[in-house]
Image (cartoon, rainbow, N blue to C red; front, top):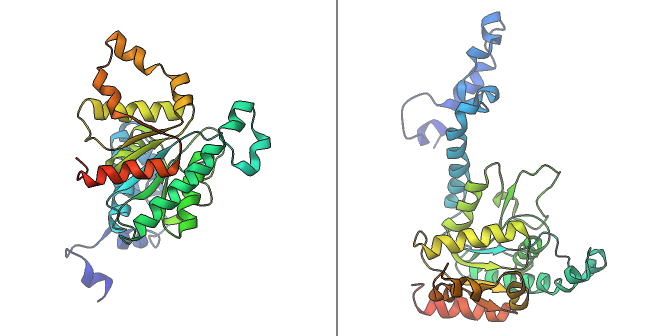
Length: 276
């Protein structure tokens, strides 16, 4: 079947017209910005007024690609970009950061186990999804790579140069301008959320997801924090409940673990309850 026969409509398509424009005679009129096709005119697409369109495109592009790959559910891994691997622990800026390197190892182990499970569904379910960067994110994608499966990286453009870590599946390596749309893609397919020690970005992602679950805007999923000592030092969870700013039962949304095996067991237990 030819490309023309595969089309779902009889109209001339946009790809054909983009090619045709390149053969247009060079005149004052055809060189003018007004003559450019709107959807391939970068100057036009980057105008302030086009923000709603750009938001829609950032939501749609990853959605379409993941749908085409048959990805139904993911396992989200949030965590600090500065946490070193055990081999690079000497580069840690603080002794505390060096101590946290053990969670890099647990992240690799956890992602490897989840990806082995994902491969039983031919990469449809339990697909590892990280922020695509270094630290815990790299560990997650590395574990999936070691298992021989695919993993997602949701990168974001930052002021300093940054490339996705080398273990993200290239066809699932996305880049975002809008933090809000990136956060949606983290959670739209999430079957479980894991949070490793981290900084502002990790805290932001963690509390946003917790708020969505707490308010019923997102269904409950296993919400697993690695490192009880770290999290209890950073956040006084009980004080929030005692002050009445959250309900005591809100604390039940969170599970604390130290190892990958504990996290896998929680997800398995949740699965037996039909992910309710």
